[in-house]
Image (cartoon, rainbow, N blue to C red; front, top):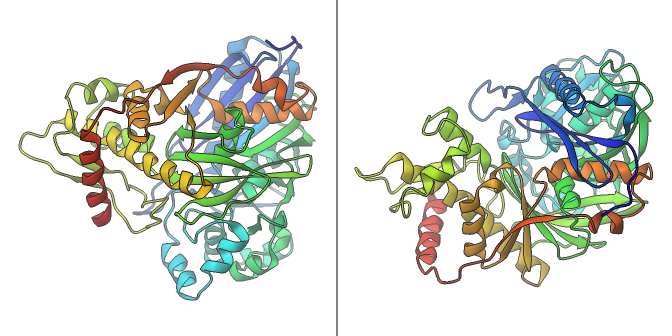
Length: 494
């Protein structure tokens, strides 16, 4: 138990399908959590956009609701931390805040052809060396290039600093306190940032024709960037003191502070991060090298594997196929049958991420017979999510040199006992679920609180991290080998 300190820290967790406000006290108790959804926009196949005004409205609503639910005065908020969907990018007018156009979401694939051109031109090794990333539409660089090219006069304004670029953390911080900043974790996902020098890379800026004048300053993940002013739903003067990309935020929120500790977040996508300490590990197995965070000027690195679709596959069953009425229903439906009866679902609804990196891949359901039911499809969906993550964790272990000893799980789908147990069984690895599943938001809370002295050290908060349940692997399941083989065959043709 931590020594009690008055007040609260507020997290703004700005995600792909909604925004969440989390109020946490000094003992890491969640006092209030409020989520407000907003629509994704799909102008054409492969394109995914967000209306930045809808994002801002969702933030205003969830923060106001959280404060009301907790019945506290906003003046008791000691600091604000922001965590965000990382690669989603936008430009806005430096004077008015008016967006250049809708934000391009991390799932957007419109620059796939441009990415292929870059590979064919021989830029892949240079980009991988500088950024730790593969060339893929996932990242922000080709999104920024596309927006500047498609909007007349935008490049000229960006050159003069009249047009500002940023990921969602930058835009929210600018709206809250009028400063144009990002942190190293978000910058490392743009494909414009050198993870070794810790700053924007001139060669990459030139390659993508992105002017330095439009970019935010790159700061530590835990520091006071500015104070709220003129927001309306919050009083002036609250320090905004933590910025971190959502997946790095979950790593921090899971107290994975030491090299070798790993977490998997089952959100819209599935994301595994392994802390590698103060040295970047170059992957030989399709993983990414990324910045986990920078605190007190010291960089911490991670190896990351991303499955673009995880929880989004369940949403697809709910919204498009209408197989289920709500996401939690999938567990009961999936477990109503003993197995998928040979049905395989490759959830490549936005291409395949790690370790394959095939933006052209498409989702696929195979093995259907006249006897296939919606329960079999539900079962195959959860199987597909777990099989994606198993590929990633095993590849990651080969990169790191030793097998991961424990996987801490979080995110909405981690509430699904069947999914987490299947994950443990496939990997033959202990999976641990924490008391607080909103670890992305918790990471930004901890970073903001540390910056203002609400907590004294990482050791103090690590001692307060609490587990809820352990999923011990069942190693006596020979049928899993056949499941893996069917999966591998399907992935090859997806």
